[in-house]
Image 1 (cartoon, rainbow, N blue to C red):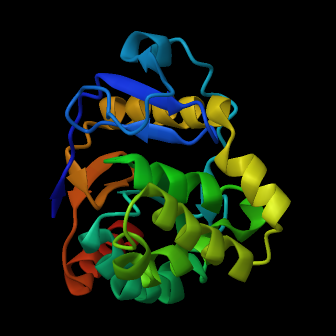
Image 2: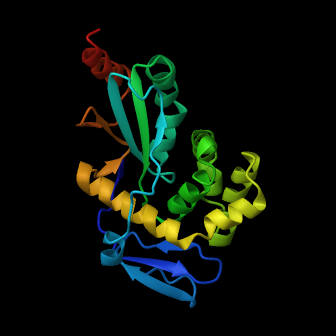
Length: 222
């Protein structure tokens, strides 16, 4: 289970290309001399109401389940490759669970993946599957340029045009809004690790599918 670093001290925006670089230890990440900084207080003032919740399943399902996950978290990738597929078949597709996916940003790479996945919201969950499937490749592709290049490949594979990918990955305002949204969510729900889950308002940690199934069945009265 990947532990969440809750304090993000600074967000640095790379002036050339507009990609957002974030330090998980609370300081600016020295990537390029063309860097400007926005501190955490600035992020607190951002309007996060514009961020779209990514939802699967029946809006009126009897159970609401929120997943907090990072695209660079190996345990999150394992969950999506295994447990999530069973969960989707048994509970989401059958109208029993409304599933909400919320990103956690440990690092700049996870944020870039999120910006790419959100480029076309209708394709978000399909792109998320591709990102997790290829996590070990794209996240270890090399430096920032190589990693962005691999994320672009995933976006193109999902049918997003190069121009649109360019615009999404260079949207500094959207990046800052996502960081503020993420920080608000993890603070409000007390998230300290990924993947973590909120089921009808109650915190549930990552666990085998059989145990998760029991929790859901108990709630359904089955």
